[in-house]
Length: 187
Image (cartoon, rainbow, N blue to C red; front, side, top):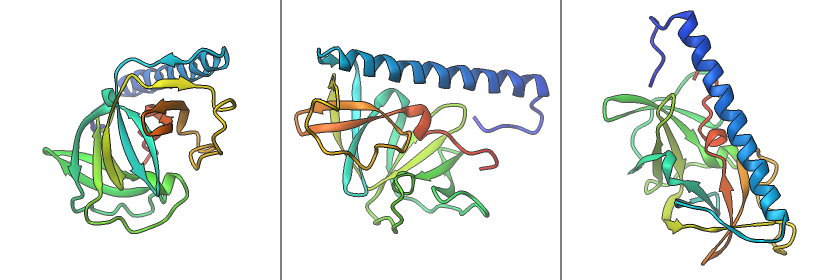
């Protein structure tokens, strides 16, 4: 939901508090997943996860955050926005902030015309620009990255990754929905 000018200071403060609590809870979930992974037992994560391809790599995004996947549409630029905030679009009559996930990885490029927008709900509607959505993975295994023998990924150090999961296609980063969907103030 977009903030309205009529939102009271009290409502804004409650919203900010709720968003901070949600971020803290998601950070705790990340810590707990890492702790489970280091115990040497692979943990199966419940639910469905979307496999998205971004800048030549893939990652998993929890489906619970996703409203819909659509093809790339016209985006209205936002002046003075951060590099990963491309602008806005209308999604079913609601403004959505479009964020380029490849720019979050530090990769600048023009998206292909067949790129996808992953529409996600939350305090604001956010559209994540990805190169493509590949498939759904059910209940991937959370693994300890230090024991997988996998090389570091481009997701390491971005703050977007909650852990690593084993899928039939190999080891994939699991994205933190709160970090990927965080819309900078003023956007």
